[in-house]
Image (cartoon, rainbow, N blue to C red; front, side, top):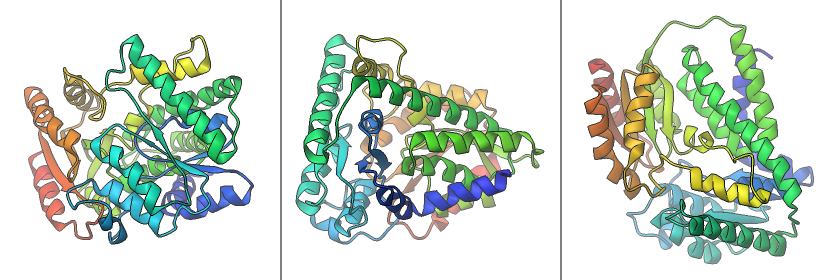
Length: 372
């Protein structure tokens, strides 16, 4: 297929996740919902179910307000709102990690608000680097496995996990390659780029890998479009249509990112060796870095953002700050300091899942473009 046909396919999947979920259910597969961030999808995949990403949606919040205060992450609020409205009915379970304060409380609310879909916690350690941290992570994975066996009727096999790890490592590699390829194809809109990343949450990774490989090959056969002003984005989530369309309108091109729902997902592979495949997966979490929800006393992530922007030729860094996301808010002053030291302009816009008007963001982005 031509590149545009493939991009249309990614857009269809990214904008119609409910249809994609129904497709898997109708084919006889079990679906397990995976909340952000870093839910151990490899385990779910190895147990024969479809890991299905749930990051909420840009919707008006009503029912979820009975469970949360107004000053909590709208990703979590919209996730619960969709659950209450029955959007995820048919799923066998939801696995929710515990990497921020909002994630730590949504599970208990989910149990009461959406009793038809069992809640399975994944408790990660803050001190993930020492041996005891790795052991703690492995124990968390073992609990997830036991809960999936009990609630969803799935079976775990360590050899099957080894095969799933290969699938996920291959997907990580192709997504990293895609970022580099898209950087050289400014004719691919930021909206289309977002669709490719977003669709990955709603597909079996082997299926998504194949489509991305086809896209890379198709782009290699086409000439690049006219140059645009290159930028880097950073944040938890940056997929709102109203936002990415403004970036396209302003002639800006995302050439690399530090977004939790995008490139951060694919930065770390599971290592090749370990006593068991489950041990290998626990070591993967140990080796993960450069994320606001992962403990890092030295905040090496901030310097890495500046270095990555410089290496990619980005003229500036746009921080897309999810409202009430404390980990991201704490990091922003340090990100700005690191970028200032490298002479890279940086600006921040605040977004919320309930936003319907992005004109204030448009003004900020237009001003940012004019100074680049």
